[in-house]
Image 1 (cartoon, rainbow, N blue to C red):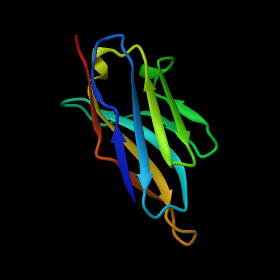
Image 2 (cartoon, rainbow, N blue to C red; image 1 turned 180 degrees about the horizontal axis):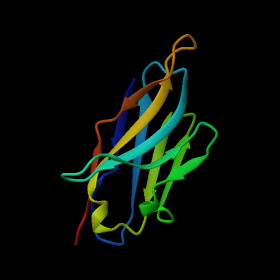
Image 3 (spheres, one colour; image 1 turned 90 degrees about the vertical axis):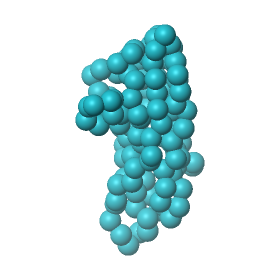
Length: 120
């Protein structure tokens, strides 16, 4: 299973970006899908996640500004980021909890990350 993230780039403070992440390979079912970020010199932290049933959780720092969504047919997860702040500069990683066949347990997979730079 591979996760491919895209959509990062340079954006001015107050601007918006939409990140995408698609899972491919042997996939029977995907449970939770998540976005994490890692700023320079800091630990990787959870930004948002979305469960199989659509329930969402957000970090306090992004509530009201970011929206996570998923496309079940495409095995994809998206992160719409609005009102971006300079402290949002980080590499953003997607994560998915994947069941490859009906016979195996769920396993976590990570994408390589996409860089978001918020700067004027």
